[in-house]
Image (cartoon, rainbow, N blue to C red; front, side):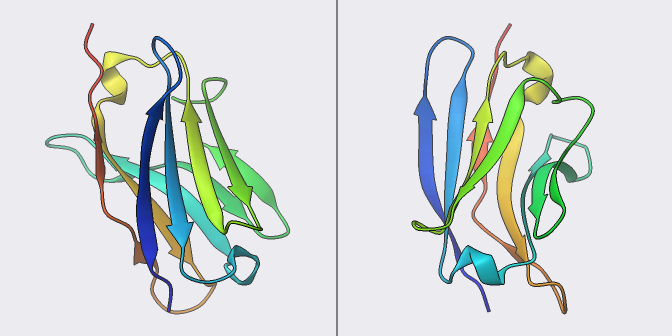
Length: 115
């Protein structure tokens, strides 16, 4: 089992935001960690993920602007979001999947980008 705790968000300058999520166990034991988002009236979609032994993947809409990273000492996974656009407005969720069974979700974080 994995519990994911939202660690908050940090504004790092105009148009940038960093989301952080902490796992209750070593993230080295977690197959995939990622960030999803859900905009009003839309389905939840994957934004970025890190898969053990494979690396990182990004949604086309955020490539070049968002960066997912993990800290294996702190057991955290962060999402650095730069050049934010109004269409990035959504509730963002941290996720973890052990590679078997169901995945786990953290609390959502509202991100609102105004034009």
